[in-house]
Length: 385
Image (cartoon, rainbow, N blue to C red):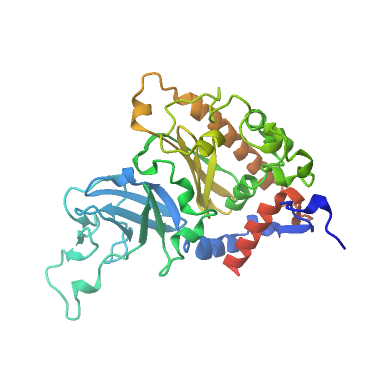
């Protein structure tokens, strides 16, 4: 049978697919499996390198029941360790961030001291028992990766290739001066939902017309409940139409994602004309983050599972130093608009989670526009076996 013309280059699902089992979103055993096989294996975004910019600066981070310590050494290298003393397992640093007093990491419990390279330098015992060699007790190392001003960690002995965790080549963000941008604002909230619920919501726009009225006006194609033209099986009927509701992109006259659609700073000089006109470019790194490049700022969203039905959402807004120093800079133009969209997303994610415990609901079903959810579900299944 010939393929119908409307199916050619159509992105959507052509065969009905089931969702993940409902228990995957609240079962404690399933949650622990995903923490071990996904979150403790893959590269997880921690924060900006500027948070640990100077020698002896440190930052702590929790991933499930694993506590991590990041330290910048005197040579400028960023080191990662389990935040655990080798003596009897005490927590080394209880503070979220700070600067070490000297070139040592010292346990507050019994005073064991480690160099910034993690090597054990000193114990406080009056004698050393036979068979004890300090060289056998360095801090437990954690893999650290700095990429263009962002810091990632992996708890795996052999983590997967860094670039493989992203949905598009890392060079897609070459036009944005990511290394030199500074954090202008950070917002954090806890969502009462499983981490996968957020990623599912992120990967479809069926909810956009009803949940995101302001965003759907800013990006008219979202108002049609799709994200890309080819999510419409009849996209060829409008292939030559320049209307944003068919071709995608911002509404006419809008230049960036702000309340007014106007720029809040000078556009990045290194952007291509195509990226400047597009006004938003996404780079997604499962399981923990996505970056959105706009013409005048960058938005970074980080997820962190707290429990089977609890997820931390952290949003960082990055700007040039020149934009932040401008007296006319209006932060609310950015955070008001993007914050509203993310608050709407969080609310419907919690709504989704609240209904999943129904005894009769074993699994959902995916509609054609939810092809990216199907890909995400296949990834979860492959990672967890």
